[in-house]
Image 1 (tube, rainbow, N blue to C red):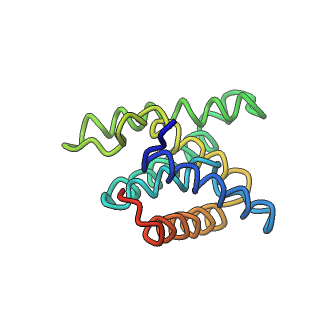
Image 2: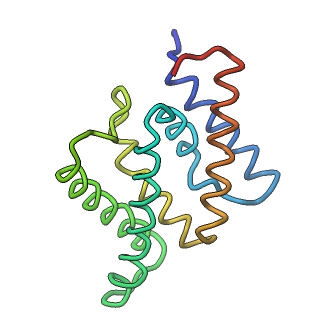
Length: 150
């Protein structure tokens, strides 16, 4: 089986995420998040929108949805993913560019803001964004060292 550059970047992101979590105990939003966002480095507006949608998702679920229904565990996680998907479709309808598509990985891009929002709820905004940003930088740096074209 021949691996592609996209696969390699995602795998590097997963490995770095696992190592980081084991060493620090801090979650970088999800195992695939740093690798996927590294693939968007040539589109910083896409990374910004992903973080922005994740913040909006967290606020809507925490201050809105959770006030009208009981949310915990899988129900809360599902609410985060669902709200993030709806927000992405709304923003996609407004903005003239498609920021969520990376060579066939659109489904991953759709759930990313929900994963970020869920992690924000668990460990806070600063910790989530700093750890995820650090791992994006490490993953991107390793792609440069390995001469991976993203």
